[in-house]
Length: 99
Figure 1 (cartoon, one colour):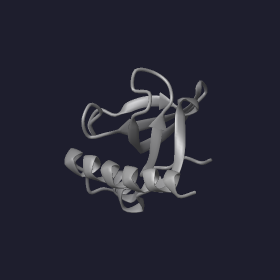
Figure 2 (cartoon, rainbow, N blue to C red; figure 1 turned 90 degrees about the horizontal axis):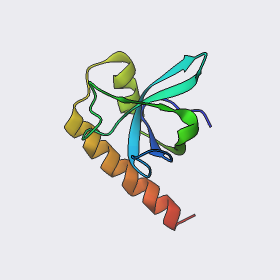
Figure 3 (tube, rainbow, N blue to C red; figure 1 turned 60 degrees about the horizontal axis):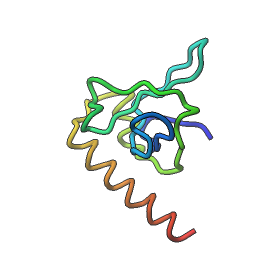
């Protein structure tokens, strides 16, 4: 699955295992493909978490408006990120209950 800015992902490895994040950006390097993640709490917009894609569970849930704002501006605030993650997690949990 292709991961893009504004998409909800769940960490599968590390001390943040099970935590939801929103993808800020994607970086392709010779060492692999990495995502820059934010959650608005520990990982704020000005200091995102760099994580290998193989350590993420991609969901099909995304916020297109936020993805566009990440790429083109205007800036997104940390309280907005926290609200968006809460809304996207509600959708994600409802999808799991109703396949």
